[in-house]
Amino acid sequence: CLAMGNLYYTGTEKNVYAVPAKGDGDVVTVTSELSNPRGCAWDGESKIYIADRSADGIFALPLPSLSLEEAKVTRVARFDGAFGVAVFSSARSSLAGCALLPLV
Image 1 (cartoon, rainbow, N blue to C red):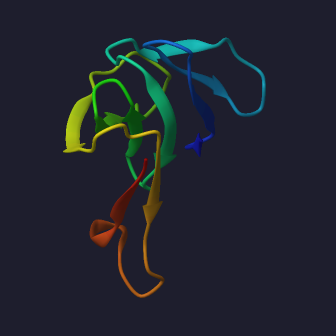
Image 2: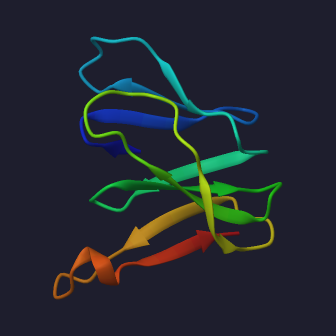
């Protein structure tokens, strides 16, 4: 997913990576705390949400304000076999009222 000028993507095992979207930087591991990450979505503000199929949940990853660096993830929802995630927000509401939609 694209967020704050960086491209974030899940690896084949426990890692989530990021690289500057302009292609002018190195790939950075932003977390290695997950079991089987499968897709991510940006909330439009300061977090990326990641589905973890093996851990049966959705996790939030806070985005760094200035540079890419490793961060701690936090479980925000439990969904059996979560395989992807989407963030939905109505045009009439703020992102504070967004909903997480797990894909199972």
